[in-house]
Image (cartoon, rainbow, N blue to C red):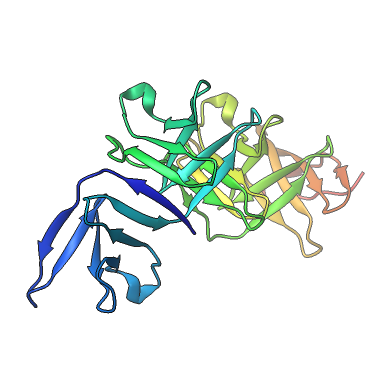
Length: 265
């Protein structure tokens, strides 16, 4: 836990019992009966450990945790109360990551690790981050949800893997952990992300097409009907048999309309 000091104004809210709450930075705190100046979060009963100390000179000492979040460029952000701040190159000040859109919130990191809050008001919602099982922060730039549906890895001929989720397949982006719909070239924008702990973050699950036609054999092989043609009352199927560990192409068998047969090459 770390302390930071603030000159921000507090508001007193009367209660039905004749006491008062302190509202600071949009959160409410109730007074500790054993202390003259300590106030604990109103949600203390459900485990919240936030607290403030109200001094006679109008200053507020707040006890809240903050985190350092590494950036791809080798720097770090400070996350405080779900908002992130980036460092000013010429001082010890940190400005809100949304400074470019007009947010004036700022803090200052002292040598002893304490924070001085110059302005705690933000004109926007906090960014969305998820934390992996290894403790890594991953920023989500748009609405998302975690998939609770099972997914499968399907080997490809090039030695990579597709992810099958809810009957649709996704191929991996070579530069990130994102997986895009296999029909991306046709304009489908569906996208998911595979986290290090195996969770699937779904950014967009709306597809502009029907799911591919896969069947799973009793031996666990994935069979995809790639093409379909109809010539003189004869149906021609081109089938790929995809093994869990090995991929082989099946023979193309021309059969009447009453059935399909595939034999490994």
